[in-house]
Amino acid sequence: MNHILPLHRSIRRVCDYIDHNLDEPMDVKHLSEVAALSKYHFHRVFVASTNITVSKYILLARLKRASFELAFETDIKIIDIALKAGFDSAEVFSRAFKRTFSQTPSEFRKQPQWPTWHRVLEQTAHKQIENTLNEDIVTFPKTQVAVLEHRGAPERVYETAGEFVNWRKSSGLSPIRSSLTFGLPNGDPSTMPASEFRFKIAGSVKTPIPSNDFGVLNAEIPAMRCAKVTHHGSHNTLEQTIYLFYQHWLVQSDEQPAAHPCFFQYLNLIHEVDECDLRTDVFLPLC
Image 1 (tube, one colour):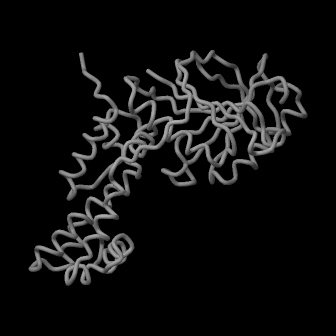
Image 2: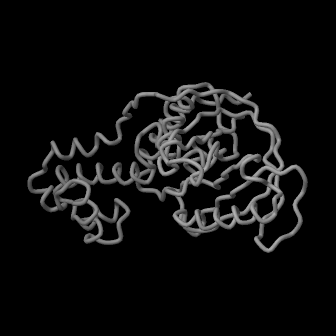
Image 3: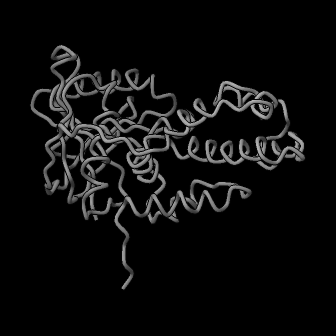
């Protein structure tokens, strides 16, 4: 029987892998396999555990090594250090290094500003955030829904939502006030190209819906065991609640996330209440 590592140990294992393979290409799919997580959950758990993205962690790890080489291996040419760190040219390396440490590689080589260097690398330290969330374990029931899928830039989701509202009003098959409303993303929009982002806007229905000019389709949200937390306020700050959820509950629990991405149930809608009064249940499917 395979032993599943607690999540914080899984992420530590990934960090160790990165630290020991800095000369190799870093494929997120492979790193998520090292963590024994889906790509979707891997991004969120990594940020919850380290407070930075995996790409930022890799960059800092490579620049950290490069900084030691600059300071203590002065016979190595800067271009060779740049290429070893995965940069195509000394110019690109120089821009990234200065953006990170406020010194060019040549300046750092001559007189490293170590206090600044340490402050930057403190970003990799785990920072605790006060846990103000109340989590519950629930069984989400199988739910028949009508869905309209948004494709592309996440900032344009409201355009698709408007179309779905128009369908609901014109069809009467999923009344806004008496039906449930859901949002089902295919992943974290901050970790994927906009062209790959998908977001299903869904409303519960009692009977299958007919074909329509809006492109709304029949679907089902399966029954799942989930952890649930309620987000209060703007949908623009949902990510903060999600990361708190991952950091203060999932990472410290004995639970493992299922392959299904987290999803949302909107308990009220932006056109019904002031933004500060919005309430959204966040469901995290569990194994």
